[in-house]
Length: 156
Image (cartoon, rainbow, N blue to C red; front, side, top):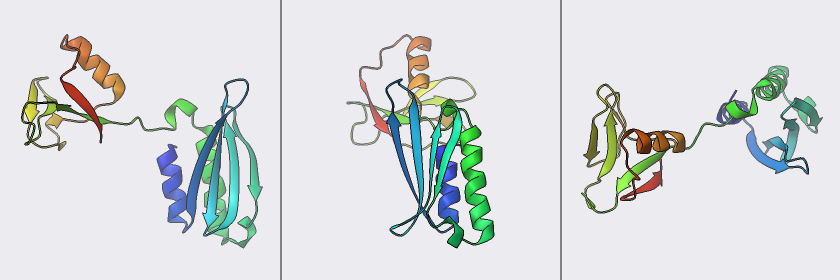
């Protein structure tokens, strides 16, 4: 389960999700996920690279049974997901700094042929890829032998 999916599950239960992370002395990350009902803490889960190691229940017993079970099941499923799979990588548009400056100028790659285009607007569809992760951008640099210095990265 990815972080956004856990947050969606918590919100679907009528609660607010708060996320914090901390790095300990051994460079291990511990995630703290809070399920809040307004200002009241409903549950706080501590999750690290080994899994769920503590779930503090403040107001958990006040939740309806199905919500309580769904929340705990969500924490467990999230904890069982490898940390590398919990986050969706950020995607970026590559906008040319001066070509089509007022009309777009977004780098796009045709999915089926690999052809590169500059398009006037920033939209993705089934034909053109216009948003890229940092890893995909590095692959584009290698494949097309370019440094992309004329492009700026804009978070999608």
